[in-house]
Length: 243
Image (tube, rainbow, N blue to C red; front, side, top):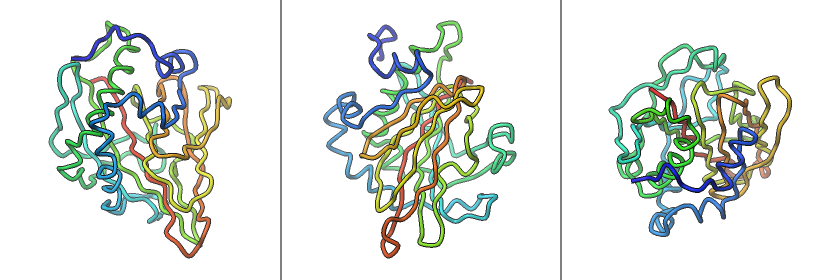
């Protein structure tokens, strides 16, 4: 059971005040149970087993991913049957307008202690910040494992659609790993495109929380530091939507 009346912490305060919160990994770790954190290495290693995203309208082969959906409420987290990821072109002019089918999470990751702890942690904040009259009985939650690869001749684009909104209510982006890459700067803009903040997720579990109804977000390209070695940025993206 999750308490709707939890005292507002830094994440909730920043979300309410400015529409986004940058959260260092050390603070994320303090928000999760120790039992889950002990399982982090297995969770992070699963990013080595993602399929290539074949839907990139720009022809890029630099993105790997898996996708799963859940129903999350105060009392349960239920994995939904396999389904496509869909965004309208209003929110994703590059890759929107079609149903995109991706490999689901591996079963041991779909119910992994780290993932479940992150979903509970995000739910507690997002649900409490949603007006009582518009809280759903269960949120539709989509989870994305992303690996963005940079090569010597091609940067990797974490957000190839550019500055955007996701067409949901809330977003959490969690850095899992950065290997041999530079840049990848997260930028947050207001509804009228004014820059509100920019920062780089550097360390494992560094995170960004976003009120998707209030702000736009984007991430600059990542570039390989050493062209002779693998270069990539691994993130977990979790979106919460009513209905």
